[in-house]
Amino acid sequence: MHETPVQVVPDDVHAREVADTFRLLADPTRVKILWSLLHHELTVGTLAELVDANPTTVSQHLSKLRLAGLVQTRREGTFVHYSAHDAHVRRLLTEALSHAEHATGTADERAEGAAHTHRYLD
Image (cartoon, rainbow, N blue to C red; front, side):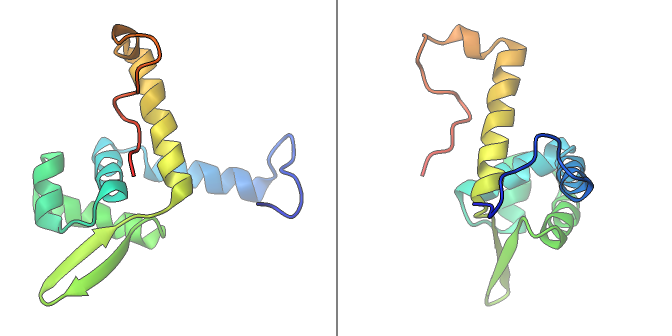
């Protein structure tokens, strides 16, 4: 919670931070990686299989996400496990994926009141 209310028009600092976050998430592979990591702690190899990308590409994306503070690591022996537990990013991706369902018409195909496909489940 902010100590002072968010202004009607964002100031330059906050507007730039939002733009930087959107720029970072402007890659479909990164969206898939981050969504997967919000659900489970995973290794590069497992992530590569889940998002249908080669491990080198996944590693490069993870590096950028980690530098941005959206992904954290835990080492176990020779394996590095990645995770993301940012509630703000979870809500952002959930809303963006829900919007995508509506934009593509897939949300309208389900019965009214049905859960969105990309709802975050704990």
